[in-house]
Length: 313
Length: 313
Image (cartoon, rainbow over all chains, first blue to last red):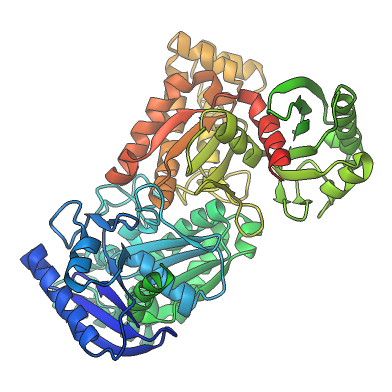
């Protein structure tokens, strides 16, 4: 059996999987990332212990996805927003506790592996995975292998600049697609509308939530054809499409697979908008050779992908 | 022995190489691309015959680099500005004539292979090759292998959009880095300066050459510190740097290697400008892990790379 774990900033989720890669049990706990590395490790160990306790057979491997720059070969978390220790030897720490071979990888990369092996991207060789939520994460499968680059940091699709005079991004740069098309990016637009006294039920909901956008608000607003929600999403998806166009021209992928909270909530509505912009800004023969699909595993992509890296080593 | 050929729009150049990959003889003819596919094939055959005639030993393979979308596995030129036949079976046509195993690849890709195996990019595994000339071409070596994507068209770095409201590009899209930083892109800027009655020896030279820029003009203008030439290059290199920043964030490469006529002419002057812009628009850890180098083979990168693909199969 295998254990796959997704260490997020809010929750740690895990799954116990059969050797046939079927999910058998689940576990979930608060990650307590704000309480420091010792706290998050304690929570991680609890999730692993719970799953291990439910296993009738030997656990052959543990896979862990975690945000940050990960040296997966060495099993080291080089840097992470959720772990306040630089070059933290996560693989070694988990193996010392459980005596089970453990493999680690960036959380978005394991999400892409999940979709590639078990989800919407199954059967493709050159895959660009894009997850649109609070931020925009990405991962690449090239020639049938996860591609992670020199220090394991490849796939930062959210930080492709599409306008050097664009809005500041959380990364410190300007005009990244994350600054336009993530929930955080869209909030900038929405809050500017609110400040300029525009009114709609959608804007009111965001205002009443202290200016924070939720995917559910978008779903409801699109259902009732809220003019401002349509405007915000049109703008965001056009920008996202420009960024993806550059990726298509660079990588000539088989497939662009889109997931994350925003896409899960409104994929059918958003995908045609993204594709229309992509078509406009990419080279015709390259656009035509690229398929677009929705991710299918939702929040499970991480635990499935993490299980997969444990099962492959 | 091997033969390596670079089929360009103006000239076809070729080299005869020893089995130790040393160049022994060279040949060069006009490509006569404008006279149609039969004419360019005739010229190609002449170059190959000339080199073959000078060989004292058996030719083990012929490698050919040619512009366009190339299906290198099938040996077919899917589409090319220099060959007016769609899906032209170039490998088969050359093999039927010479009875020597022949391998074909996109011209920019063979240039990157040349720099990777024998030039400025030697020893690196994840390489972004960028050639700045009349246009901007690119090629990718990822995990120690040429990466060509689904239909063999990957590496179109020149057509990464960095401003959806930017100038029109030859590809039909807008705001591609080629529209700013290639000689063609810079000509737009220069001719706007000329039309607005700005005066300098540099602008006069371009004007007297019917508005066409040559790399040599830039070299001379920078030597005498021509204000307008400095302005044009500052603008172009900043834009190029934004595009490369996106590639760095996406691919986390070991090396960016820069070649082409403009870089050959002024690399020492331009490279710091490109890097400064890249640093501003890419993620700090990714920028820091990326090296920048100049290509070293000049026009020979193509014939060396073409020879290499023939020698590897």
